Image (cartoon, rainbow, N blue to C red; front, side, top):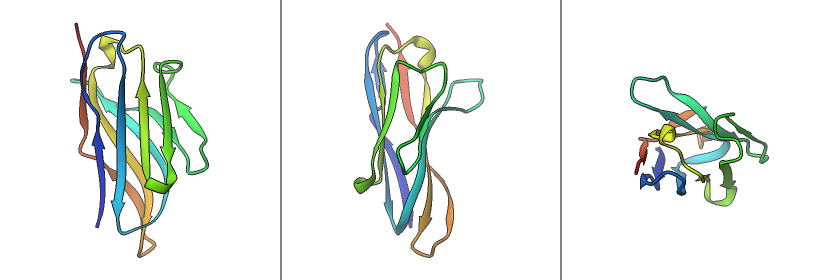
Amino acid sequence: QVQVVESGGGLVQPGGSLRLSCAASGTIFRVYAMGWYRQAPGKQRELVASITDGGTTNHADSVKGRFTIFRDNAKNTVYLQMNSLKPEDTAVYYCNADLANTNYIRRSYWGQGTQVTVSA
């Protein structure tokens, strides 16, 4: 079994910071790309940032300069450092992991989501 579990969400004031974490665990052979998505009420899920197993990153234009994605391959964990948060960043944040299990079956796994609310 493979699990992908996020943590670190919460309520923060505009201009504040949060760090999200996402760990993949279980019968894992190899983790490839990992990413963060978000979905605000009434909107479609959108990519926030992604990172390959080699460390190449991609950030959405709306978060460039404010959010940073990074990972610890030894721990199969990806992080999202969020600074200068704005009310429009309010959403449920989901982690995605592209990985192969110990049966060498490769697929995409989603976490359960963590709420981030930016409000005064």
